[in-house]
Image (cartoon, rainbow, N blue to C red; front, side):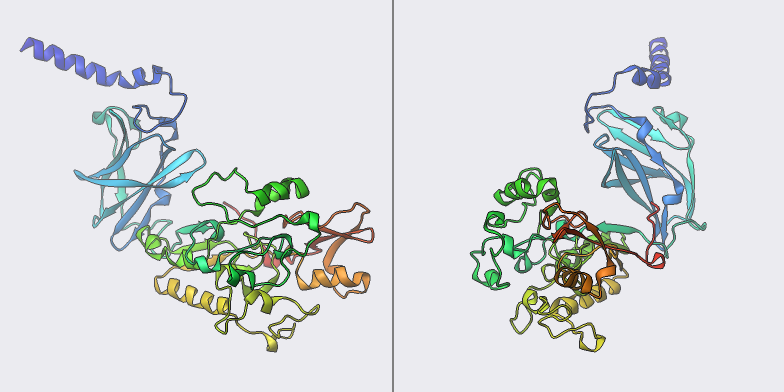
Length: 418
C-alpha cells in the first residue's frame, strides 16, 4: 500500500512539473506532426470567430502549421472532433462544431504523438488544471446566421472543370505562340505566330497542377530571356468557373456563404485584372465558342477602334451576351440557390494593352479622344509590351504609353482592411 501511495505521489509530482520539463526541451528544427512536441505559443482561440447557426456553433482554433495531429472540443463530457481547414502563413486552422447545445463549459485537447495540451481560459499540460471556457450559443455574437464566411478563389488555379476551354495562349497573345496541334483550338484565332520571329515563344503549355511551380517550360525560359522577370506571372493552370461550380458541395460542407473570386472578365491573362472588355466574361473561364460554333475570341476581337466583330460598339443598344456571359448568369443563379453569394475582383486602375481606348491612343497619338485617359511619358527607350499587366508599356515615336488610367474615382474603390 505504501508503495502505491509513493508511486501516486511521484506521478502527481511529475504531472505538476511536466510543463517545466517540456519547456526545457529544445524545440525541433523542423515542425512535424507526430514528433511529440507542440509549439504552445502558436495556439489561439478567439470567441469572436465563433459562427452560430440553427444547429449549433462552429469554433475555430489555430496552431502552428504541421505541428499537431488531433484537436477536439470537450463539452459536458462529450468529444467533438475538429478537422484542419487549411493553412495560412505559419498557422494551421482547425474547425469543429458543437451541436444542439444551448450553453455549457468546454475546453480544447490538442494532441501530438504522446503529448496532450489542454486549453481553457489558460493552457496546461495537466488535465486537472483546466479552467473551462464558457459557451452560450444563444448569445448574440459577431458571427451569426447573417454573417459572411468568405472563401477566396483565384479562378485559374482553383479547379479545372471544363478542359474544352483550356487556354492555349496567355497575355503575350496568340501571335507569340506556335499554332496548336489541336485543329479546333487552332481555329480560335487567325494570328498565330505573327509576332516578330525572334519573339515567338514556341508551343504554349499549361502548368501542371501537381508539378513544380518553379520549373519552367520551354516557352517560359524563352520569355524570361526576352522580357525579364515579368514572365513569372504568366503561367496558366486551366481553372475556370465550371471548376468553381463543381465544388459547391465542398463549400456547403464548410458552410461557406460568400465566394470572393478573382476577376472573370475578358482578358488573355490568368488574373484577368488587365481587362480587354469589361462587358464580357473571358472565354477561357466560360466557353471558347458560341452555340453557333463561332469563336468568341474572333467575335470579341476589335475590327475598329470602338467596334468588335460581334457587332458591339460603345452604344449600349448594341451590346449582346456571349455564351460565357449566359453561363455566368446561370453560375450565379446556382450559387444563389445554395445561399452562396459572389463577390468579384474588378480592377479599374489599369487595363490590357488590347483595351479599345489604349489601342486607339497607340494608333492616333494626341489626336485620340482617349489621350488623356492614360499616363503617357516621353521616353526614347525601345520597349514593347512585356506581358506583365501592371508593368507593361508600349513605346512609340519616343513616347512611353502606360496602361494605367490617369484617375480612378474614389467612390468606386475601397481599401482592403484585413
